[in-house]
Image 1 (tube, rainbow, N blue to C red):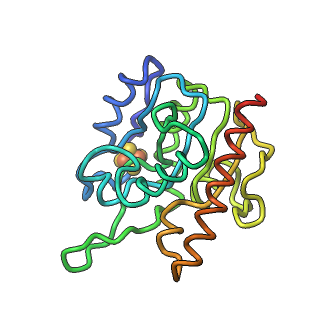
Image 2: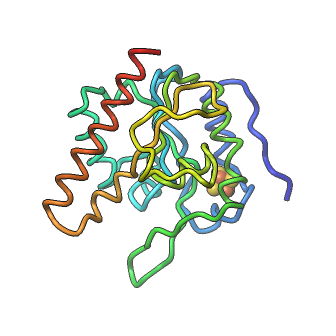
Length: 204
Ligand code: SF4
């Protein structure tokens, strides 16, 4: 089936178009498309990998456990979530059923490429001054497959995008930290990376 290309009209119109996207197979098992949300012209855009279980059910990005952790880190970094545009590189939840649970599965390169027109359209319409990639999938989708979040997190890096771009970890990785102390340190570093984004914003 031919890819359904978003039309550059308005974010609302594009969001509506994305509801019917069939450009890869991920729509088949997911509940719904989870498009980005936030102000139509946000200065800061955060981009994650894909919606999780709670996002798939609610239809909104970053509302599950990772989203709650992100909310705390944003508040600690002095960033009002209401001013941020939040989205993902892939708009449908990819998972593997395990009993009654649905376990997150990393999207393939072909799925990321199929979904890319939606993300490119969001960036083109929202026109953020600063973009933060949350996790390796988002960072590598936007900055190339050689990009290493562990080595270049929290710093503005060269990119072809019309914005200053930084990368950090995905908040879900903090939830997977092996113990409380590791989680506390990860959270501290994550918040520091978001503060760096806020500084990049004020200097852009
Ligand atoms: S994941 Fe993206 S490309 Fe695939 S069907 Fe959903 S919206 Fe379309």
